Image (cartoon, rainbow, N blue to C red; front, side):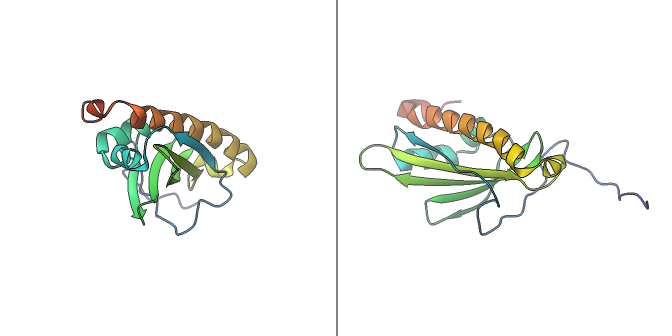
Length: 144
């Protein structure tokens, strides 16, 4: 072959993942009820330090209508597109849904069903971390 043009790569930071209008194709939703109001979850997601605690390497691509957030992140299998939806529940809780999938890199060669099995585990762990951050006492949110 003719080779590949040299690039800086993504050693120091993830490559940008272009936002798309729809959920990542074929992604499975993972949901969790968080014992905190939706505004509290958005506080965590809006804080850059907390966002990195929640999903290391995440970059916000778009936020729409106060309920959806689209992120790009670097996963073990390559650049990943993550869509987060926060829906208020009755009372002091909310439901958070995550859909994510690899959009480029070596993970794209893994069959979707196998890939989504691993992604569901990652989403479940990410939701647990997000819930822990959002459910922490208010005074702890601003401290590192």
